[in-house]
Each structure stands twice: as C-alpha cells, then as structure tokens.
Image (spheres, one colour):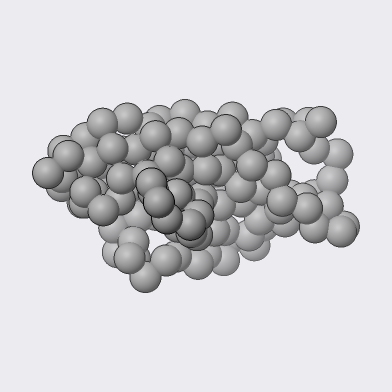
Length: 117
C-alpha cells in the first residue's frame, strides 16, 4: 500500500522560509510525478508545484521565483523549499504522487503552514 509521509510544516513570519519534505513508500509501480498542493480555509485545493521523473517542473504563478521543488527518484522523495513566505501562503500543504501504468493519485495527510504578518 502506497504511503506518503510529509514533514516540515510550521509557523513562520512573513519573509521567512520553510522546507517541506515527503517520502513515498510501498509503491510497486513507477512514480510518474510528485508534487505539492495546498488548501486554505474556505478555498479549493490548488496546485503549488509538481515535478515529473524527468525533472520537468511546473509552478503556480503565485509561487514562481519563491518556491523550488526538487525530487530524489532513487529515494522516492520530494521537497519544497519555500522562501519569501507571505501570509497568503498559509494553508494545509499536501504531498501528491502520481503512480502506475494507469495513473492514480495518492495523497499525504497534509501539513500545516502558517505565515504570520
């Protein structure tokens, strides 16, 4: 059974930095892509950043230039370095992995990121 375990959330002041990490385990199929989504109170879950097995990346416009996603294919881990954090970055951040010949989305349990002004 695939499990995604996240770490690294917390409380930080505006302008500060945090690093989120996620480790995937239990997969018998190729992990096609890994990424991060976030959901703020009263809002829909949105893509933050995603990286595929070839290291191609895609970022939400709101985080470009501030966040960097990276991946270790050998260890099945993905990280999100978040710099110059803003209060509007406050949300629960979810790790996502797309796995399998018939792609299926797996989700972590979520980690809270709170940016104070």
